[in-house]
Length: 131
Image (cartoon, rainbow, N blue to C red; front, side, top):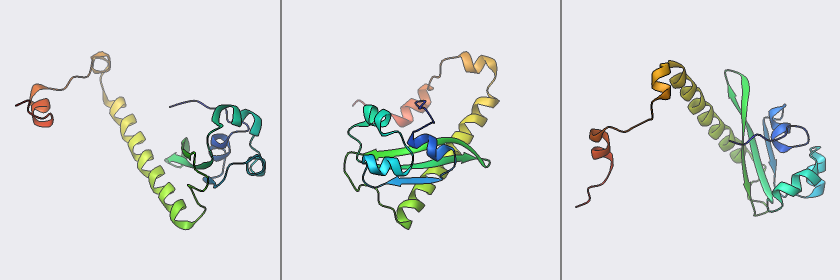
């Protein structure tokens, strides 16, 4: 995960209140509409032509922003199906984030320091035979 500046950014706009943001065709005018700093945004993302961003909420608190982008204008359209799909992806991501945090919380200090290894039985059942 990357940490992006909130002020003047798409992630910041979504994190600070807009639950779903879809920019069908990224232009200076479309960025200005959402008060996004086009100069700083364009420096990092000059190939992005379409954006969909959604809040990730855990227990009614915004914890992250899930953003998808495309180099194709119009890849994301402002319609009910796109918004519902974005919300579904956000919900799945929120569940995974919450489960990961619970898993980490329940690990002992020793388990946290120990390298994660797969048992021979597990790897034998998951990995294909080399025959």
